[in-house]
Length: 548
Image 1: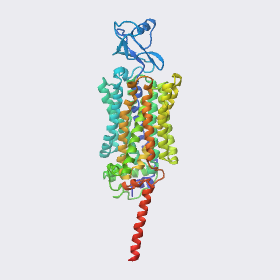
Image 2 (image 1 turned 60 degrees about the horizontal axis):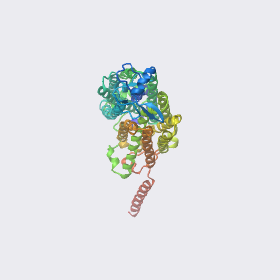
Image 3 (image 1 turned 90 degrees about the vertical axis):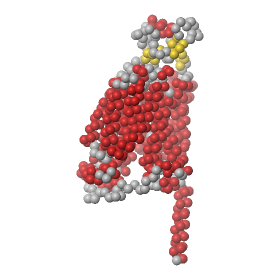
Image 4 (image 1 turned 120 degrees about the horizontal axis):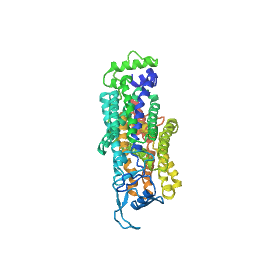
């Protein structure tokens, strides 16, 4: 019998055994959530200005009248949102004549506001002003790590097993996380961040695949969404820890050291029986399944496996999806939607410290928007349909991001809460749980895994680009600088949402198995023509038989 039939009809789709393993395998998602958005705090850019030359005890906070006089004589003023503030990047030239047109130059030493964070990696490595691009580069390298990790972890998982891949990711995650906290310079920091990103996505993918192979088909959507909620729990936790721990070194250690607990998987989590069976290790797979049946209180047949248990039909390559105009357009739309969603998600998360108000509150509201979108996905996906929900989300989020231009350009400080609210609605629209299910159902069975892998690759490219879009504001300058990233994210979301209207609905439909099924999936005219041709052939055969 098929492996899914064993899980669904005999073992139980989500019995006690699977629930125990499932809860353990949700922990990697939590730890990955702790790390992947921690840079919102560890790379936070606090308020800053040029340091006063020759003053060793200079601070961002004004210490008294004499200190203020020195500042007025040394630091020029600039206008932001109609308010005069001290220039964060320039200092008056020495011996330049006093007056309105006094010349200034860029400085090379700064003092930082320590009212929120004692320090961040930005303040230690001075990634501000002319060096601000280093922060975007650091985040991009993290996302390059995600891209490489998603590819390599899949290969390791298929060759050496889900359990070994997961434990390897745990070891790399622990080492790179602690190494990041003790990075002596920029080069060491970005190298550790690369491996931290690679191990974070490896934790997510290895544990997710593990879960999907243990749970019956009828419970996989539920299990996948619950796993995603554990990721969100990690996002909430890092925000709380950052609030309590203002030193970025200590914060990094606090979110990295507990990963050592995941080595307990070696004792408590078995290897995936589906993987064991795929490698010809039938006795080990059967032993695990019979142990699971004992825990679940179910009964398995005497003979479990045959040559068809893991037979998924003839293999095919993802390139087959590019040979038909219909499938080519559909595949490119899916790739573009993944690209935009992941870009907007990480971009809006990174942009949170540019919004007005408390960074911790804004970050938490963004996470609440993410959880709300996931919960609504769970309840509405099988009622409204994948297409309506996905396109609606994208268009809503895109419109909200574009609408931020109005309060940014024409509003005052009292209207900045509107910008923050609209940005959070944009975050709501950038949830990936819908597109993951939608695209998995659009790809035919023979290329489903490679299709999702290629889609995820597109998303990682979007993540790599997102920090540079966030930093576009620094290039543009002026009041419009804060609107530029949101305008880009909004425009791309609108385009992706409109293009997704050309995708067929998959709710309550028999999903495509072969490439030929995919060509005609959702195409009534093609289906009608195929049906007419088949009827004509059957009629001709019947006529021939009668004549015979």
